[in-house]
Image 1 (cartoon, rainbow, N blue to C red):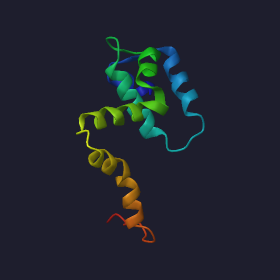
Image 2 (image 1 turned 45 degrees about the horizontal axis):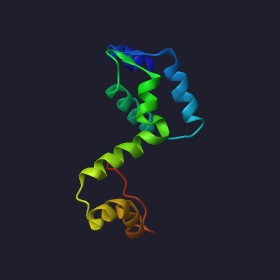
Image 3 (image 1 turned 180 degrees about the vertical axis):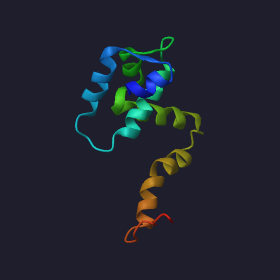
Length: 107
């Protein structure tokens, strides 16, 4: 976190890194969640400083992605069909692909 922020000319509040790491725990595969949470924190920055307050306002690692999804869904038409289709799409895709191995990338 510190290296990329420094390269971008940003400053991190000293306790931000500790707060993010504490929120992550030992959960594997969290990098996309951290990336999204830090982007949301950047959107709430004060000048060049990414602060714990902005991170917490965004929802932290656990809630930022949910808040972003809710904002996207709120812009869609309010019909139940659109909303339900969006919410069930990943589950439907898994059912259609059940029993089939995932496609392998060429190369």
